Length: 162
Ligand SMILES: NC(=O)N[C@@H](O)C(=O)O
Ligand code: NI
Image 1 (spheres, helix red, strand yellow):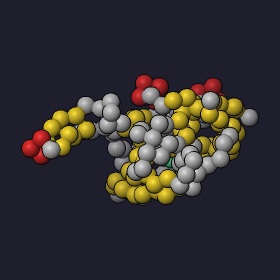
Image 2: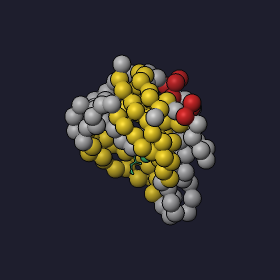
Image 3: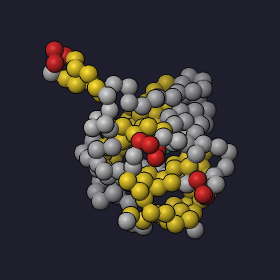
Image 4: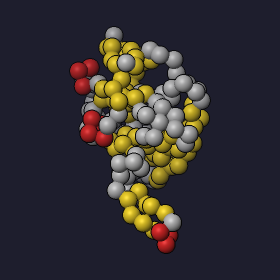
């Protein structure tokens, strides 16, 4: 069983897996006669394959209990997948680099601070949505289209928080 302690999420530490979406650290510019700051182009949406198109959905997730016990990671080979909390919900992230197999030494666990969202790059192995403490509501942007877009890889992981 791989045992991990989730680390605070940072864009640098997550860069091998995708993007961190955070209006506190992103470039922005003024629009709408100065009434709005546009935090622009924060994550790369990938939609690959036949009839590929972008989906915008809302996930309402029940909270996980800790330690988080995983039996697999999943990946979406044909598209990215972004999760943005709508009410400052914190969530646990477990990721591994894209590839046909997972080296346990490459698996990383993070915890968000409520203001952060993530965008998993196409093919990045990840745990399914794992919200902490209370029911969570997330805006999700990912790929629709033909063909399989979800592979699972068995992996025993136990994740705790500091
Ligand atoms: N299956 C689904 O839409 N969600 C998962 O991909 C997930 O990462 O939570
Ligand atoms: Ni997913």
